[in-house]
Image 1: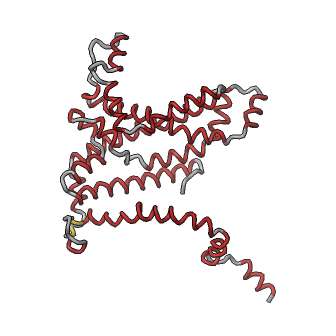
Image 2 (image 1 turned 135 degrees about the horizontal axis):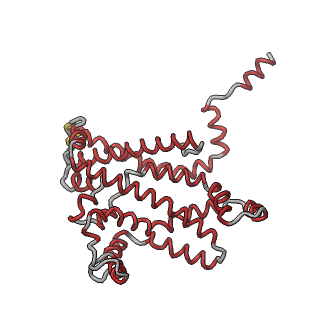
Image 3 (image 1 turned 30 degrees about the vertical axis):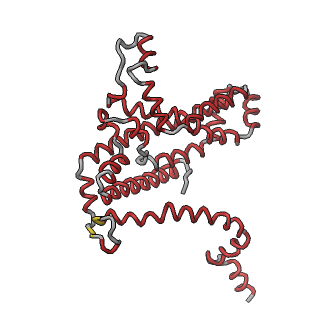
Length: 318
C-alpha cells in the first residue's frame, strides 16, 4: 500500500489541478493582467468577426443574416487583378529594403554609441537621434519633400555645389527613386528610437567581461566582436523574427504622403491598394479580402522565421 501511495504522489497532476494552486499564489498578478487581456480581446480578436465580410457581398445597412454569401469570389478577383501583383511587388521591395537598412543600422549605431566614453556627448547624440520618431509622418513628409525639391532643395543645391549634377533632379517625380527615398526616410526617422532596445540589451552585459578582455589585451573592435554582439544576440534574433513577421504589413502612411500620380506604379502598397480599391470604391468585401491575405501571409512568415531560427540558433519567440 505504501508503494502504491508513493507512486500516486509521483504521478504528474493534471494541468487543471496544477493551475488553481498557482492561481491562488499569484492571483494579484493575474488580476493585474486581466485589463490587458481584455484590451487585446476587444481590439485584436473581436474584430476578426468582420472577416466574414470577405465571403459575403456585403451591403451596409443589412443585418448579418441578410447578406448574400459568395464564397471565395473576392479572393479570385484579387488574384486575377494585375494591380494586386504590382502592389505586392512594391510592398515586398520596400519591406526588404527597410528590413535590411532599418535593422542593421540601429545595431551599428547602438554599438557606436556604447563605445562613446564622454557621457554628455553620448546622451546628446542619443536624444537628437530619436527625436524624429516623435515627428508625425505628415510633418516628416513635408520636410523630406522640401529637401528633395528642385526649387532651393537642400539635396539638389548640395549636389550642384559639388558639381555632381548640372541641373536639379526631380526626385519626387521619378519612380525608380521612390523605394530608396522611403527607405532612407524611414531610417532617418526610426533609427534612434530602434537603437534604445539594443542599448538596453548592451547595458545588461557584465562589465567584468570587458575588464577581463582588456587585461588580455583585446582591442575595442575585438571586444565588440566577441562580447557586445554575442551578448545581444538573443535580442537581435527575436527582433529580426518579429520584423520578418511584419514584412508584408508596412502600412501606407509613408507611401501615401510621399507618393503622387507620377510614381503611383512604385508607391502603391497592399494597404494603399486596399484603401483605394476597397474602401475608396465602396467595395468593403474586397478590401477585407486584401487584409485577410496580409494577415495570413504575415502569420506564415512569422512561423517560418521562428521555425528556421529555432532550428539553427535555438532562439525563438514561440
